[in-house]
Image (tube, rainbow, N blue to C red; front, side, top):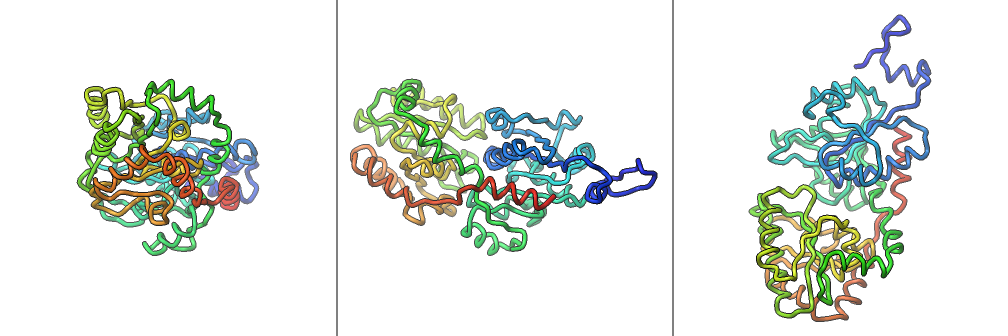
Amino acid sequence: MFIYKDFGFKVNIYKARNLGFLMALKKILATSWHPRGANAIIPIVKKLNLEGKTELVVIGHGFSEKRFDDAGIPYRKISDYGLSDVSLSSMERLLLNEEPDLVLTGTSTQDENNKDVIEQTITLESANNQIPSLAVLDYWANYWQRFSDVANGNKFAFLPSKIAVIDEYAKRAMIGEGFPEERLVITGNPHFDSFESKAKGFSETDRKKIREEIGLPQEILLFYAGGIFQRDSSAYGFWDLDNIKMIKETISKSNKAGLAVKLHPRVPAEDFKEINNYAINHGKGKIKLVSDVSPNHLSLASDVTLTACSTVGIEAVLMGKPCVSLQPNLQCEDYFSILTRNGLVPVGYDAYECKSLIENVVSDKNYREIILPKMASGFKVYGKATGRVVGLVYSMI
């Protein structure tokens, strides 16, 4: 509990503000480690800054730093607070320093290299200090894992005061997993608000320019959005290089198609090296790894986006662009089921099905330019999500 002493007696800092002893604006501390989590809160941060009704402090950490840089959002790092990690004790010190009225986060899960992730540890430490917290969900998968200490088997160890949920489907699934319904508020994902306007603002000139930058001369440009790492291949049944090899084998039958590949921001260095070596040594002028073009622009410039279950595929569909899901030898649940289950995106669950889909994309113009976009057009998400989440923020401070 943080104590304010200037009046000659001790009083909880948060109660003091609510009672009017302090006239400062309510303070919000926003942070994320995961890039998708950062994407989800960036529109909220921008709107809060624009409206100027609160004081806002943004903490960049890990993969979120580039997202905040790209969005033009000023942020601090944990090192600015003299911290070297995001453990509970470090987050206690950070909160003591900033004294926020609300903590706003994206969501993330632990992995083998990160048992402490800032979205989780700062949420738990906020609860320990009676500070309300709000997490913004960005995707239809791994619900309970985002808020649990998976490494120690402690389910819901990091449960925030409220969770901004994408839609009814996600809410039902989360309640089924044991989430308390009173903490779930359907808002939509703020990151999805801008995709229709992005598509409308993308010109044929933009399309040609990006294709020239990529440097693949083929008539048809395929874009593969990565996201399945080699360390997870036993769980999924495949990884990105398996899909890239399969696409290369299929498009090698003609000279009509080339493949641009964009790997996930969190791709392990050894994965990147192996995939890059394959593209250089076996691509034969048909595969290019792309690093300096955004995945949204790649989807808009290409003919079809191919992916296993990346959010990039959902973003492509939201922009009216066709997408195909490749999940050969799938050994786990389909994390792209929000699209595949509803017939919005075709999916292959074995190599034969995947190759057939790729062949159809390359050989059938009607399938590529009419059937696939028509399928994708049925996907709808909650619009104006940013305003809903900002309203929720104000209600919590």
